[in-house]
Length: 198
Image (cartoon, rainbow, N blue to C red; front, side):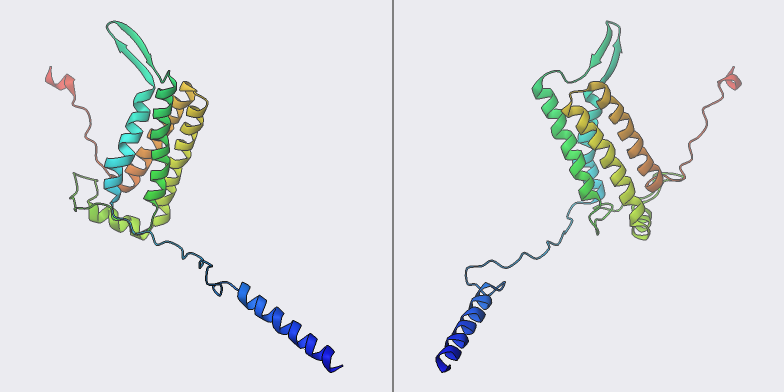
């Protein structure tokens, strides 16, 4: 009976030691679980626009379209595998830029800028607007991502017409954000009355 008790106690001790050795962080060679990374934005929203978003969007817009010249009409679109691949690279850059836009704590501009005229906000005004309602700005960024994903589908199917439609929707998404956050009350003067000059 004593031998059985000793054997049982020895087995139980062995199991406890094995369990302890398998616990997270107790094994000498076991890596600890990574801590969630802290995003520390260095570039401003304006920097992202100038360096990544505008160049990518301009390239996408310029990749398809109709040009009318004295010599005739030219339908511009990617035709070779490399041309489609280059448009795809720009679309991917645009999609990922929308993730950068919604990182909390990103400044509007590296250097403050004043209002550009009636109804146009200064960088301080925009900063305050985004701070007060970040969800609204994030919704605009996600809308841009949505149309950029449509552009990616068009590129992957090498569908120039669909890419053109996505480009128009992308223009609308950009303009909606600019109107809401940059020049919400811009006053555009009426066209001159040319009849009065006659």
